[in-house]
Length: 457
Image (cartoon, one colour):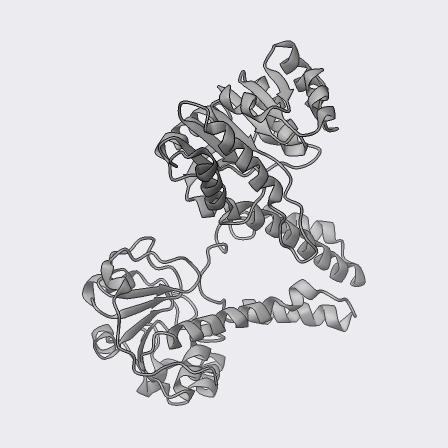
């Protein structure tokens, strides 16, 4: 394919050299005449392992060149990658002026080009940037998105020092697009690479780099805080974390990474608090570990706010234990939510087939009695009884029997705290705790009567 890459800095230079090594004809574009001259002499614009050899070979094969002429680059290529800088402010916001400037120039060039053109945003940008770039190009070119051109989001996952290896051996290839034509071209372009190709929604692709890098930062900080605690106790932290990393069933796995409700149970609250206390006892400041419980509490409160926002007083809670398949109520986050709702005057009914109040013992019984002393008046093992009198059904754990709730009880409002369904066509309102709307039924947008208006005070 014929490719143009706007921005010959770190990401652009690596992309240009690697695409050329794959047999594509690449034209780099930059406002810096010095960078253009370097590429045109077969030399890289950055210092990076293996990059010098790739640039030399690409240049010698006639597959790698550079120019300052935007129109020349756009009109002679099928795909234009935007890889210019997005410097950050001191408050975390991005300066996208370079992105938008390149978009205007590409749009002006496309006004004089025939045929379908793909613009791929490789720079790290916030959700919404693709939409704005599309608008700019359409305005400058007078052409129609999806018909004459498409803007796709194609974030890079490169590490400095190993970027060439990372480009040629990526963990995955991610393209966000609403154009089937563009998706097919991008899949063909990346086809030779040994990685899964994922075509997804544009905003999903735009936010992924931030999610990835923030988690990488979190992992580093978490490891360092564990190390600080271990040092004060004379423990080899590398042995600790080496064993930690060997558990790929729970510790390093997708198991705990799907957004849902707050954690609960007897282990996670107790043990995170214990580690925090151990650090405090040894005068070790561990702000990340110390704020885990606070973050969990804030997320639990989001659930309370979401339920109250429905404007209905009759609430049916489906599941009281902290997770499916158990009667363990200890530190169950929904217990705290129910306690708050009862205190605010809501009419609560609870279904949980696993919880039989008369059989609760020990700390399990002590906990629930301290929160909801008259629990027996609210909980039942009769799902129909709860659903029939409630206006809002709150799904709190992933019991298999809850799969059929939308079919059995149409017209109710469902508040989903655990992402019980991936997609939904439900004849009623649906609201999820931590994900975008998934209900495609027109009833989702219908006006509903409210029992009360939520007040700020």
